[in-house]
Amino acid sequence: MKSSDARIALVHERFTDIGGSEKVVAELHRLWPTAPIHVPIMDRSVLPDGLVGADIRRTPLQRFYRGGRGYSHLLPLLPLAMRSIDVGPVDLAVVSHHAFAHRVRVPAGVPMLAYVHTPARWMWEARFRETEVPSRIGRAGLGAFSASQRRADAAAGRRIHTVVANSRHVAARVQRYWGRSAEVVAPPIDAEFFCPDPSIEREDWFLLAGRLVAYKSPHLAAAAARRAGVRLKVAGHGRAHDSVVAAGGDAVEMLGTVDDETMRDLFRRCRALIFPGEEDFGMVPVEAMACGAPVIALGRGGILDSVVDGETGILVDEPDPEQFAAVLASFGPDALDSSVIAARGQSFGADRFRTEIEAVADRILAG
Image (cartoon, rainbow, N blue to C red; front, side, top):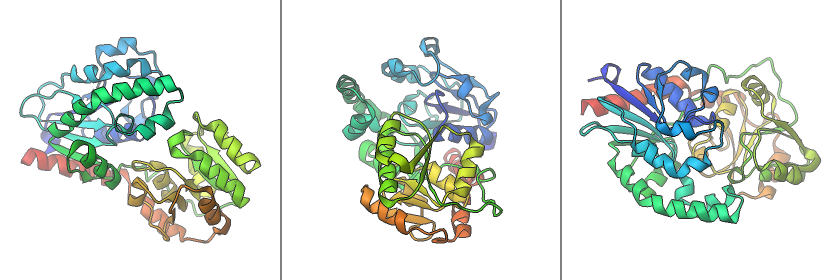
């Protein structure tokens, strides 16, 4: 049986904001447009364009959700809500996972394909809780909840038929925490939208883009720009806003949240994107490369699957402002070939993602 002829159910963590995982679900829906999408909670106003009109089914937990990103009070209930989902009589369940989605119950004999953005970092890594939760009481509470969930998380991971990770970095995490091997399929970018424009010239400033949160180390990029004496434009928002301003001083221009058209224009004009954090994959650097922008990044995590050191960017060994500053100070406008960079970014397009995921699903159903 081909997946195009099968009964498919899609499962996602939640629709509370738009990020990389929501874009993945949009592509899964494009691949299997009649498949219902099951989520515990949803804010319809944040759905990606590709999911408007999709058959999205929520759980009773929805009545306690206030909308937007404010769902932390529901965190202890999300595992139960996920287990309460009835996917119905299907041939395959395809799960988009980064916290509890793999705990969904499927009928006996029905295989589950889990696309894993990451096993929950806050659950397994104390350092992540320390940087993401500001209060000591909050960290203690999340630590206790994490300890109560790790056994169930690993057990659910072992029940998955086929695990697909979004990077080699996440595949290693799957092996470490769940004891499972994982295939790797990189997530999709919109390569038709994020593309070069040869008529636009690159300008004399660098770019930092994305959520301003501690684990992404945005303050490091700001401090490096200040040390190197270069200009840095920052597109994004988050709790680390003030630390970025403090670290960068007059070198930093804060743009706040920008729309997709503005972001594409920034990618096309910047001298290079700075990406100082360790990410599971990192879609922003790939979108930047697809527009021809080089990437100066910490050489750890998922970035190793996308940036080719010395060809499409420069990888820095340590999360050290001095090391980043040294690269920024010497990085000229023609340091790397923009056509090579764009070709690398374009290779991560959505067509490639759908083809690879469909092949995995077909193989499972044939087996």
